[in-house]
Image (cartoon, rainbow over all chains, first blue to last red; front, top):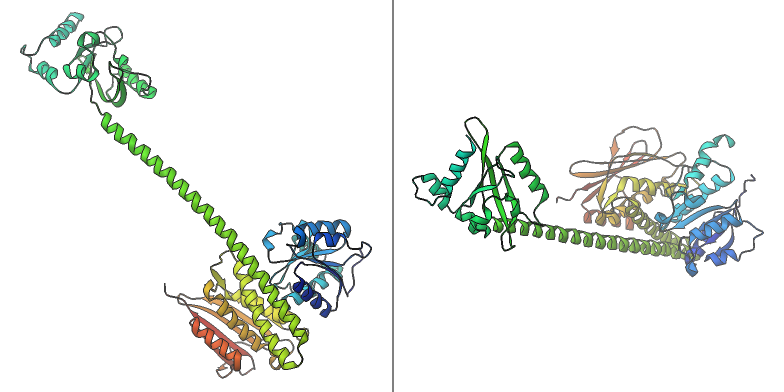
Length: 155
Length: 371
């Protein structure tokens, strides 16, 4: 598998405009690129399919009655290599196996926490396993963590 | 004894009282219903029934003689009780049971029946003696109590279910409120960050950044509170480590490690925000650029004693022991004000010191509330 290289191309799925804007700016400050901002499942489905995001940051409660879980399955179907990370105030709504998604950043996040999570994610995506200690702001899915745990020799 | 003697006895009992046998006279005249049956006759029939028994059952003596007592039983009589009676007769033992019997007019009554065999010198059973007592009132009270008990139990079950429902509803509400609080805090953080980008000069930016750090700290408090199993308690040790790691990891310019030695250190949820802010001010002060050098270490430890919850934070070069500390170091300005006011509010003592190796030590001691 071809590992993505920094800067990462990131899809932001968030229905709260101000929060989306904030996330967008923090991503750019960290040196990555925002591929698109979507506020609903419908928005995600309408994106051009030729450019796959490296990472998708997905809120749980979205516009037009759609949910992050729906977006997660749509992304996995459309772009199987994209790393999906939920960004939610409702981490308890995520199933134990994350439905195949890769992790979660809990809201409310601090800027420091968000930036730390992004850095950790970058390490884990581009050059796994991550070298930084796991920040309190990010929780990897069991499968994603196991992937890092069993392949330390790849570094 | 032979059949003839039995007959004589029966005859004797049949006689009107006053025939010279005081015991027979007493049995006839007593208010307690009594009968005697003869197991050596076919089907163990009644051979004597006193007046009280006739009054109780409504049957005349003629109707009673020669019949087995089972005709007093009816549709509602408990089969198990009947079986126990039959076994007592077969085994020749005495028995005391409450049995539902029926009168001649069809009405029922609860009969406290005592049945015992009467043996001759050779130990052979000659008669069965049975005394009866109408205990309908007592049984009624008992069954009324049983009914009342099951009614109360049903009521309790219903109320418990109601309480559980209302608890579930409250939990749902709490969850919803929590969700909204978190969304709003995320929003506040985002607004401040967006504003920060507009800051014209570094003073404004510093002020906004300090404000944002405090909002972030409150958000972290809220997240810790709600993600723990017990929303009424707040562990300051794990919170401090979380906050410290957030602060250090966001800084690319330094390489700060965190060493944690955490014991249980819980404070009530009502104090969480205030104490959470105190810890934030301490950490923010420690990690100011003029204090930070390469390879420094945060030492965070926490514990609970019977009277106090203690958090201790050290920041400085690694590898030092318990060096003598010089109690002079402390922050000033808003930083200091927030710490001292919130400390007074939460019965917390914050003591700063600086070791001669240049490390900053802070001890945070919270007196437990005396219940």
